Length: 92
Image (cartoon, rainbow, N blue to C red; front, side, top):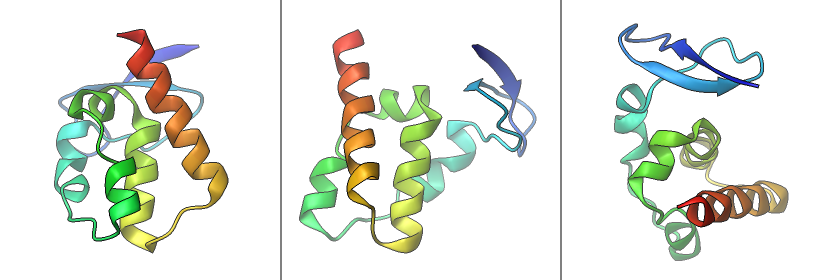
């Protein structure tokens, strides 16, 4: 089940969420954090997807922000990211 929830930070934009996520942020509020440079070429290629995918899907934003914060991802996180990105690509 999906529904729209008001952004926790700016309280202007609505975010499409699933489940019981309490503190959701819109793309505009997280845009600055997502714009950081990625030095690892393998990860740079992984995160090189259209901006619309990040705007649509909070999961993709969370994975990228996690990588930027901690500098690594597990194999399951990488697979889930690829799967979600492919689903969005096929949806178009």
